[in-house]
Length: 307
Image 1 (cartoon, rainbow, N blue to C red):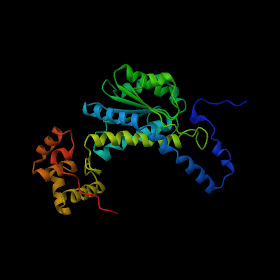
Image 2 (cartoon, helix red, strand yellow; image 1 turned 90 degrees about the vertical axis):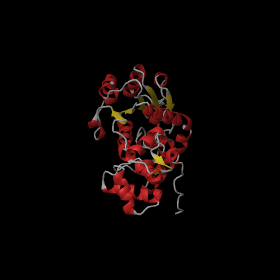
Image 3 (tube, rainbow, N blue to C red; image 1 turned 90 degrees about the horizontal axis):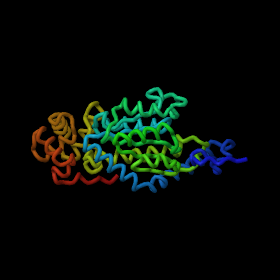
Image 4 (cartoon, helix red, strand yellow; image 1 turned 120 degrees about the vertical axis):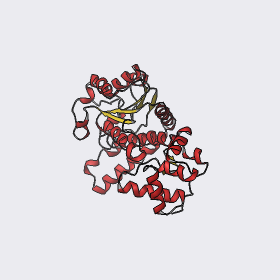
């Protein structure tokens, strides 16, 4: 007798049923063929993803924070996306946070049963100070993770906005506690139930879009240049100087001087250069214009040089 699991991510994939006898090259081709279905699945969710970007932007502008909540691979992806925001966009680490069932040890070692301890979801959100005005995004590849569903229910009960990212249709009770539902349906995995594969890739793409989109809306880019970064190490100092050289059309020594005068912040340096403002005045101008450089200096970034 065959039991058909209602969770698509747990079903067997007929296209890879003979993979255990495949050569290395055949395995590569099978996995690659499945991976090519991921981006189209994410594209079907363009509107709810855009809604999540708008909600994240509004949350940040009102002083709220974004929290990712998940278990296993889903939780690790949330922590990863959150941890990359400070070095990429110069954000406070409190602004985007990842919460994983089982806590920090679960990042490197499976914590069996953590996703089923539903009341620990409430405890974890409370420990992170989640409150009304925050935005809580639950991540559950199967759509059924008890920890995530309980976290969303608690977040909703205290007045936080909520969203769910899942790769299999979730039960109604999960939908009922989610303001936004993002469902890139990726289907059965190459290896049955291994949601670190297609579902994980889809989730990574969605989370990239949410935080990147929100940061762009907050004015953390100038065109597609990453300008709201701080020169905190040699690599970032070099990148900062190169951005200033391109945007302001100055030599490296002048770019370095600008960066120092701006306290190591590229965005402030650009405004100082084009307006002649002091550092404090440049910061004030940016605040008045929602952090968007283009609204302060009324000019486009330099054109892209063809490769």
